[in-house]
Image (cartoon, rainbow, N blue to C red; front, side):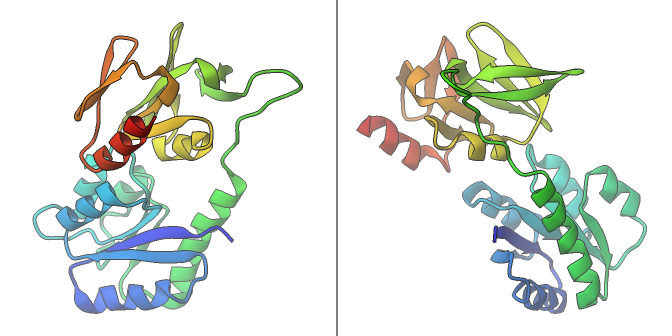
Length: 236
Protein backbone atom coordinates (compact mmCIF):
# COMPACT_ATOMS: atom_id res chain seq x y z
CA UNK A 1 0.00 0.00 0.00
CA UNK A 2 1.26 3.46 -0.90
CA UNK A 3 2.14 5.61 2.12
CA UNK A 4 1.55 9.36 2.29
CA UNK A 5 4.07 11.43 4.22
CA UNK A 6 2.25 14.05 6.26
CA UNK A 7 2.94 16.83 8.73
CA UNK A 8 0.83 18.53 11.37
CA UNK A 9 0.89 22.34 11.50
CA UNK A 10 -0.91 23.21 14.72
CA UNK A 11 -0.10 25.58 17.59
CA UNK A 12 -2.51 24.01 20.09
CA UNK A 13 -0.76 21.05 21.80
CA UNK A 14 -3.99 19.18 22.59
CA UNK A 15 -5.25 19.47 19.01
CA UNK A 16 -1.87 18.33 17.69
CA UNK A 17 -1.94 15.36 20.05
CA UNK A 18 -5.36 14.28 18.72
CA UNK A 19 -4.16 14.45 15.11
CA UNK A 20 -0.96 12.61 16.04
CA UNK A 21 -3.00 9.77 17.52
CA UNK A 22 -5.41 9.62 14.57
CA UNK A 23 -2.60 9.56 11.99
CA UNK A 24 -0.94 6.60 13.68
CA UNK A 25 -4.21 4.68 13.41
CA UNK A 26 -4.25 4.97 9.60
CA UNK A 27 -1.98 2.48 7.75
CA UNK A 28 -1.38 4.64 4.69
CA UNK A 29 -0.30 7.77 6.62
CA UNK A 30 3.24 8.38 7.88
CA UNK A 31 3.79 11.32 10.22
CA UNK A 32 7.03 13.12 9.32
CA UNK A 33 6.90 16.17 11.60
CA UNK A 34 4.79 18.30 13.92
CA UNK A 35 5.11 22.08 13.54
CA UNK A 36 3.71 24.78 15.83
CA UNK A 37 3.83 27.53 13.20
CA UNK A 38 4.04 28.13 9.46
CA UNK A 39 7.75 28.98 9.44
CA UNK A 40 8.63 25.59 10.95
CA UNK A 41 6.42 23.96 8.34
CA UNK A 42 8.18 25.78 5.49
CA UNK A 43 11.52 24.52 6.78
CA UNK A 44 10.24 20.93 6.82
CA UNK A 45 8.75 21.30 3.33
CA UNK A 46 12.14 22.44 2.03
CA UNK A 47 13.87 19.39 3.48
CA UNK A 48 11.40 16.52 3.13
CA UNK A 49 8.96 15.02 0.68
CA UNK A 50 5.54 15.85 2.11
CA UNK A 51 2.32 14.61 0.50
CA UNK A 52 -0.22 15.99 2.97
CA UNK A 53 -0.47 18.82 5.51
CA UNK A 54 -2.97 18.87 8.37
CA UNK A 55 -3.15 22.64 8.64
CA UNK A 56 -4.64 24.91 11.27
CA UNK A 57 -5.74 28.33 10.00
CA UNK A 58 -5.02 30.59 12.99
CA UNK A 59 -1.28 30.25 13.44
CA UNK A 60 1.21 32.75 14.89
CA UNK A 61 3.18 34.99 12.49
CA UNK A 62 1.77 33.54 9.24
CA UNK A 63 -1.79 32.24 8.92
CA UNK A 64 -2.45 28.78 7.50
CA UNK A 65 -4.18 29.96 4.32
CA UNK A 66 -1.37 32.44 3.69
CA UNK A 67 1.13 29.59 4.04
CA UNK A 68 -0.64 27.69 1.25
CA UNK A 69 -0.50 30.78 -0.97
CA UNK A 70 3.27 31.07 -0.54
CA UNK A 71 3.94 27.52 -1.77
CA UNK A 72 4.78 26.99 -5.43
CA UNK A 73 3.68 23.36 -5.44
CA UNK A 74 1.78 22.76 -2.23
CA UNK A 75 1.10 19.23 -1.02
CA UNK A 76 -2.47 18.12 -0.43
CA UNK A 77 -4.08 20.08 2.40
CA UNK A 78 -6.62 19.05 5.03
CA UNK A 79 -7.63 22.12 7.02
CA UNK A 80 -8.19 21.62 10.76
CA UNK A 81 -9.72 24.61 12.53
CA UNK A 82 -12.19 25.77 15.18
CA UNK A 83 -13.64 28.27 12.69
CA UNK A 84 -16.23 27.51 10.02
CA UNK A 85 -15.87 30.88 8.27
CA UNK A 86 -12.94 29.98 6.02
CA UNK A 87 -14.32 26.89 4.29
CA UNK A 88 -14.88 28.63 0.94
CA UNK A 89 -11.34 30.06 0.95
CA UNK A 90 -9.97 26.65 1.84
CA UNK A 91 -11.69 24.88 -1.03
CA UNK A 92 -10.67 27.68 -3.42
CA UNK A 93 -7.10 26.69 -2.50
CA UNK A 94 -7.91 23.05 -3.38
CA UNK A 95 -8.05 21.70 0.15
CA UNK A 96 -8.95 18.02 0.27
CA UNK A 97 -11.31 18.62 3.20
CA UNK A 98 -12.17 21.11 5.95
CA UNK A 99 -12.37 19.68 9.47
CA UNK A 100 -13.91 21.69 12.29
CA UNK A 101 -12.65 21.05 15.84
CA UNK A 102 -13.29 19.04 17.88
CA UNK A 103 -12.55 16.44 15.22
CA UNK A 104 -13.96 12.96 15.66
CA UNK A 105 -12.05 9.96 14.34
CA UNK A 106 -14.78 8.96 11.87
CA UNK A 107 -14.78 12.47 10.36
CA UNK A 108 -10.97 12.35 10.18
CA UNK A 109 -11.15 9.01 8.33
CA UNK A 110 -13.64 10.45 5.83
CA UNK A 111 -11.17 13.23 5.02
CA UNK A 112 -8.08 11.06 4.58
CA UNK A 113 -10.03 8.49 2.56
CA UNK A 114 -10.85 11.26 0.07
CA UNK A 115 -7.12 11.68 -0.43
CA UNK A 116 -6.48 7.95 -0.73
CA UNK A 117 -9.31 7.34 -3.21
CA UNK A 118 -8.49 10.34 -5.40
CA UNK A 119 -4.81 9.45 -5.66
CA UNK A 120 -5.56 5.81 -6.41
CA UNK A 121 -7.91 6.86 -9.22
CA UNK A 122 -5.35 9.27 -10.64
CA UNK A 123 -2.26 7.12 -10.57
CA UNK A 124 0.88 8.76 -11.90
CA UNK A 125 1.44 7.74 -15.52
CA UNK A 126 4.79 6.25 -16.40
CA UNK A 127 6.64 7.00 -19.63
CA UNK A 128 5.41 4.88 -22.53
CA UNK A 129 7.37 2.97 -25.13
CA UNK A 130 5.52 1.18 -27.89
CA UNK A 131 7.61 -1.08 -30.13
CA UNK A 132 10.74 0.79 -31.19
CA UNK A 133 9.26 4.20 -30.39
CA UNK A 134 11.17 6.45 -27.99
CA UNK A 135 10.00 6.89 -24.40
CA UNK A 136 7.36 9.59 -24.20
CA UNK A 137 4.55 11.11 -22.17
CA UNK A 138 1.41 13.00 -23.15
CA UNK A 139 0.63 16.31 -21.42
CA UNK A 140 -2.50 18.43 -21.61
CA UNK A 141 -1.88 21.73 -23.38
CA UNK A 142 -4.99 23.76 -24.11
CA UNK A 143 -7.62 21.47 -25.57
CA UNK A 144 -5.23 18.78 -26.77
CA UNK A 145 -2.67 16.29 -25.51
CA UNK A 146 0.91 16.87 -26.65
CA UNK A 147 3.45 14.09 -26.95
CA UNK A 148 6.82 14.85 -25.35
CA UNK A 149 9.80 12.55 -25.91
CA UNK A 150 11.85 12.24 -22.74
CA UNK A 151 15.16 12.50 -24.54
CA UNK A 152 14.11 15.91 -25.94
CA UNK A 153 13.43 17.50 -22.54
CA UNK A 154 16.04 20.03 -21.38
CA UNK A 155 14.43 21.08 -18.11
CA UNK A 156 11.06 21.46 -16.39
CA UNK A 157 10.16 24.55 -14.40
CA UNK A 158 7.38 25.05 -11.86
CA UNK A 159 5.12 28.04 -12.58
CA UNK A 160 2.65 28.26 -9.68
CA UNK A 161 0.17 25.41 -10.25
CA UNK A 162 1.61 24.74 -13.72
CA UNK A 163 4.87 23.39 -15.10
CA UNK A 164 6.74 24.51 -18.20
CA UNK A 165 8.45 21.70 -20.12
CA UNK A 166 11.26 23.03 -22.29
CA UNK A 167 12.88 21.21 -25.21
CA UNK A 168 15.19 22.64 -27.88
CA UNK A 169 12.25 23.18 -30.20
CA UNK A 170 9.26 24.00 -28.01
CA UNK A 171 7.91 24.96 -24.61
CA UNK A 172 4.73 23.42 -23.16
CA UNK A 173 2.76 24.86 -20.26
CA UNK A 174 0.55 22.32 -18.52
CA UNK A 175 -1.27 22.11 -15.20
CA UNK A 176 0.73 19.60 -13.18
CA UNK A 177 2.69 19.33 -9.95
CA UNK A 178 6.47 19.27 -10.18
CA UNK A 179 6.68 16.57 -7.50
CA UNK A 180 4.48 14.30 -9.64
CA UNK A 181 6.68 14.83 -12.70
CA UNK A 182 9.73 14.10 -10.57
CA UNK A 183 8.26 10.72 -9.64
CA UNK A 184 7.39 9.98 -13.27
CA UNK A 185 10.92 10.73 -14.48
CA UNK A 186 13.08 9.64 -11.56
CA UNK A 187 14.38 6.51 -13.31
CA UNK A 188 15.01 8.18 -16.66
CA UNK A 189 18.03 10.43 -16.13
CA UNK A 190 16.34 13.47 -14.60
CA UNK A 191 17.42 15.32 -11.47
CA UNK A 192 15.58 17.68 -9.13
CA UNK A 193 18.01 20.55 -8.49
CA UNK A 194 15.70 23.16 -6.99
CA UNK A 195 12.19 23.29 -5.58
CA UNK A 196 11.20 24.82 -8.95
CA UNK A 197 13.42 22.91 -11.42
CA UNK A 198 14.01 19.39 -12.73
CA UNK A 199 16.72 18.95 -15.36
CA UNK A 200 17.93 16.31 -17.76
CA UNK A 201 21.34 15.23 -16.47
CA UNK A 202 22.77 14.58 -19.92
CA UNK A 203 21.78 18.08 -21.09
CA UNK A 204 23.84 19.85 -18.39
CA UNK A 205 26.64 21.77 -20.12
CA UNK A 206 28.29 23.39 -17.09
CA UNK A 207 27.74 23.79 -13.36
CA UNK A 208 29.04 25.55 -10.27
CA UNK A 209 28.17 25.33 -6.60
CA UNK A 210 25.12 27.55 -7.07
CA UNK A 211 23.82 27.02 -10.61
CA UNK A 212 24.03 24.95 -13.75
CA UNK A 213 23.69 25.74 -17.45
CA UNK A 214 21.53 24.06 -20.07
CA UNK A 215 21.17 25.49 -23.57
CA UNK A 216 22.30 28.95 -22.35
CA UNK A 217 19.78 28.89 -19.51
CA UNK A 218 21.13 29.50 -16.00
CA UNK A 219 19.29 27.26 -13.53
CA UNK A 220 19.77 27.74 -9.77
CA UNK A 221 20.73 24.88 -7.46
CA UNK A 222 18.61 25.06 -4.32
CA UNK A 223 20.34 25.09 -0.96
CA UNK A 224 18.48 22.00 0.26
CA UNK A 225 19.38 20.12 -2.96
CA UNK A 226 22.98 21.31 -3.24
CA UNK A 227 24.80 18.50 -1.44
CA UNK A 228 23.07 15.70 -3.35
CA UNK A 229 23.17 17.47 -6.72
CA UNK A 230 26.89 18.26 -6.52
CA UNK A 231 27.68 14.73 -5.35
CA UNK A 232 25.86 13.29 -8.38
CA UNK A 233 27.33 15.74 -10.89
CA UNK A 234 30.90 15.52 -9.61
CA UNK A 235 30.71 11.74 -9.65
CA UNK A 236 29.49 11.88 -13.24
